[in-house]
Length: 458
Ligand SMILES: NC(=O)c1ccc[n+]([C@@H]2O[C@H](COP(=O)([O-])OP(=O)(O)OC[C@H]3O[C@@H](n4cnc5c(N)ncnc54)[C@H](O)[C@@H]3O)[C@@H](O)[C@H]2O)c1
Image (cartoon, rainbow, N blue to C red):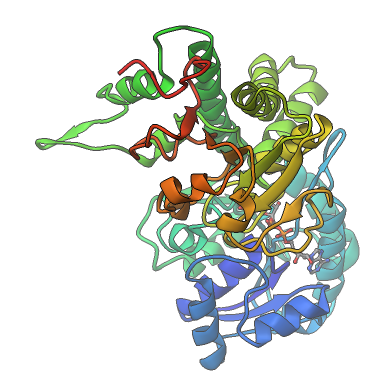
């Protein structure tokens, strides 16, 4: 099938590249010329494992190309995906990118003699596709929905494993305006064996929000438990949640083997959830609930717990080093999670702000975020090229992103280069290492032990 993708961010480019790898002919449209050039050179404009090799193959096989010419792409295809951003506003989400894309697609449809399906893949609140987007498309195209197709097809991929997630989805949700629209998407996704949920556009929109709200709730629940353990002598959130994980309803016995589903990775204490989706989506769902006259008590609490977490990490670091004023803290990890270079709403940003507010100096390192500056990071923080450079001379190293390479560092030698050998593990990602006595290792989810933080309950 010939497919147009409007918006070449994490979702759009991954969708385009994966569809091309399945044999479809894909035109990717963006408004940023540098992005278009990079894609046509075979260089994804962001870090995402496995994407570059698939992109290069697709370009070499002439199954994918990028352009600024939306009209030409729409006219040459049977379906157009809207995958532009829907950033947060004070009252929900900013639909201006969706609006502009829909208007441009609609105006191209005026000249499209063939049946064409418009698919909203951007995350939008219930009702957006069937009211807002439909109205714009009808006005711009001069046609009624039905003459063109319309679907809402939410995306569940995770940055860091986007290609695998797209190629092996748990389910594909097809929110169809009418059967004819849905049939086109069903055909496009024919080779996928996963369950296909065919439903209304509003259900499709709500399914996406319900999924992300559940994940965010699990993370905030875990961090609430961590906070309780941090205030309760003799407790350790790793032991507590580790034992909760063993509930057969969470870790089922399959044959003789206990299976640990991926969902358990959300039932872990950490620095809080971040990224371009969970915080924004939970806020949008909360705003939507309020617009319906409902009080979203649980979503309020999920966000409140999350908002507190960076401050708690700063407090841990303060307790470990005595005072932050005049201290130097090495922040290890800037991305909101390992495997991505996305810093949007990363807990690292709140932590850095908190440290700077208390007059600490910050040296930061992330394996895939290259300095010397980054638009989202306070310019007073020094972005280092290696973990060694970040940690040298510091009073504490604070692990914020669970990059596997941090567990492989020679911590004994590294800590000898620090002013004070203090390691605060904001993800409990290093708890399995043996810490020599000269290092003060501070995990989260346990009561801080002044003087000897690593002497902990077993
Ligand atoms: N990033 C994720 O992990 C993820 C996962 C699931 C769903 N989503 C949702 O998918 C949507 C896209 O997210 P993203 O992270 O890929 O966004 P992004 O910000 O990385 O990319 C958006 C792209 O759209 C382009 N764009 C904006 N207006 C355009 C227009 N009129 N024509 C052509 N291109 C235009 C931008 O230049 C940019 O390249 C959002 O609604 C998001 O909530 C994101």
